[in-house]
Amino acid sequence: MEIGKLRARSLPHERKEGKVRKVIITAAVCGSELTKEMNPAVPYTPKEIAQAAVDGHKAGAAVAHIHVRDPRSGRPDFKIELFKEVKDRIQEQCDMIINLTTSGFHLVGNDVTEQRLQPATLRPELCSLDIGSLNFRDRVFNNPPEWGRIAAKRMRKLGVKPEIEVFDTGHIFQALEYAREGLFDRPVYFQLCMGTKWGIEATPENLLFMIRKIPADAIWSVLGVGKAQLTMVTLAMLLGGHIRVGFEDSLYIRKGVLAQSNAQIVDMAVRLVDDLQLEVATPAEARDLLGLRPPA
Image (cartoon, rainbow, N blue to C red):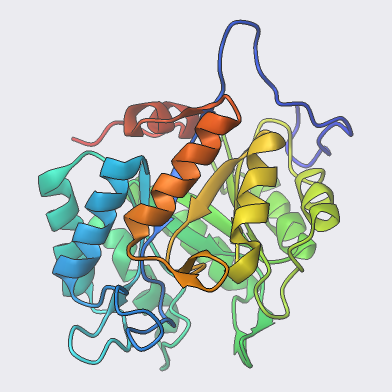
């Protein structure tokens, strides 16, 4: 099926007879906004962030989505040495897929594009790639068209697969145009970000609308922000997708109850996968689904 064609209107589980579908779980362990004042278990230091990822892997996550923080203050940071330390610590302990952010939401200066692409020079298997600008938590999340093209070309040169983060339907259309230009290798990998303030609202209707715009040969995952996390990841699995959970998206394990760790949230997701009679993908199985080359 050509890139850009719409997914079929019917949305089955997409199970092959006799074969249970594998679900990739991504653990997004700290993000850039949430603090220990909100939940004492939010990790700040490279050691804490790496351990949160490893513990998430032990619970069932195949992928770790990584932001870094100033180890003392917890403020958002983007130092390459912090990313490297987190990556090295994870790889010393397990074989999970590492996905380093390139969002750079708080970066300033004349070289923001180059600053944002620094994590890709560490050659993780995945890097997030935000397509399309939007009003985001009372600020503008600026992702101009040239950023997407530059980032896609650089990631390909470095052998890094983009995880395309989209916060509204127009961002999917922009990504599909880049795919038609040959900037993304198949399968194209989308992360549907549902419920971010002033992004697309986290509703079943909106999720159905989004996934019907994604090519049938693409891989897609869903995150739900805050109280939408449980609903959105459950619907994603029912509709044939993969899921992202963790502190970046929600600090709670249930209404009014703070999660004690990222691993506790991953464990909740694993139980959901099992209850839906699906199977959790191992890192090796996730690599196969995403078209990744095994790390050297």
